[in-house]
Image 1 (cartoon, rainbow, N blue to C red):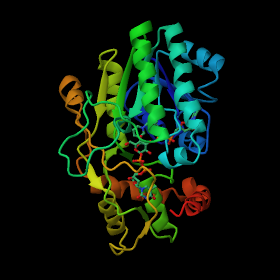
Image 2 (cartoon, helix red, strand yellow):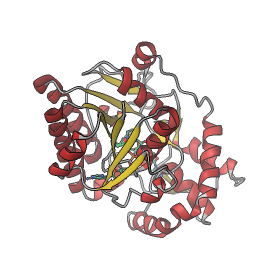
Image 3 (cartoon, rainbow, N blue to C red):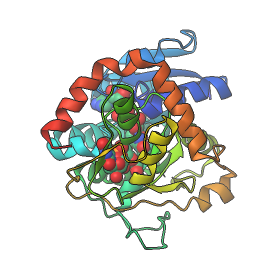
Image 4 (cartoon, helix red, strand yellow):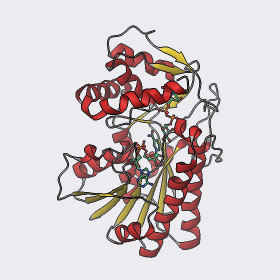
Length: 332
Ligand code: NAD
Ligand code: DAU
């Protein structure tokens, strides 16, 4: 695989994926990113120009997408509107980017016969009860809750249809909640870390009982490369690292690691339609392709993430006031 086109490579997971590819393979990367509020060109600043090229553009721009896909050996599609809270305020860019953008990419890989890997989320399956021992598998029925997750579900279905109808060489992965460096500070973990670092109190939605299944972003990206290079065409693989925690536990751990009292946070308005629990059974990926997560301790991964935000205040500082002003309007 000589050249990989990475959409959304200036966002959280995409940026980390580009770094993972540079560190583990000989491939060159072309990033296609619109640089929305969630994209940050500085996240790619320190990378070697002879292996990484950033093209600022929209995945809905069919001529641009066609030309870039035509020059690539594979496409890994991360670009998306990714934040549930935003999708509740204005679903419009979610429909355009997540559905029309994916359609545009699928038509291009169909024309060029290019290998395509589609990045998706466990949220397409809806949620589980807190006391339910069940976890999501590849056989779980789609049942998305939010405008964000419904557009991701729709994009997955487009991929499946393009595989079956047109023979597109695609795979899909659905991953649980990622954490690590370069994550936008609107998201739960970096929001709370930067709240403490900027003298604000962490904010917990509702009662904090909701459960997320955390995975370090490098473990996610190692799984993506494994599926891209060894996955079976047409297959879906769930990615998860057995990392279930409720939100209260996560906030308390952040406070502990930052040397603050365990109760130094505020309870704020809940998210409308807030999914209760996500949990991934990644047996298929582990047994069929031999992937296993490397980060065995959430606390250690979280501590390293905190260290990264402490050392990179310039990366997040300018977005902090605006992000908090937006949440304040929603009582969050
Ligand atoms: P992010 O919001 O941090 O980054 C998204 C990137 O896509 C940004 O750089 C943005 O500028 C770019 N983008 C948005 N619209 C675009 C468009 N029309 N054209 C080109 N670029 C555009 O998102 P993330 O958290 O890195 O998520 C990446 C992917 O992984 C998404 O598809 C998301 O659904 C999926 N995912 C995320 C998680 C998670 O925990 N963050 C978990 C599972 C799956
Ligand atoms: O499960 C995968 C999904 O994980 C991805 O598809 C999404 O792109 C990604 O954003 C993430 O979605 P969540 O909605 O789970 O992530 P978020 O970081 O927004 O919230 C995590 C949990 O924390 C959720 O239960 C809501 C809660 N929360 C969030 C914020 C921002 C709080 O309690 N306080 C907060 O300030």
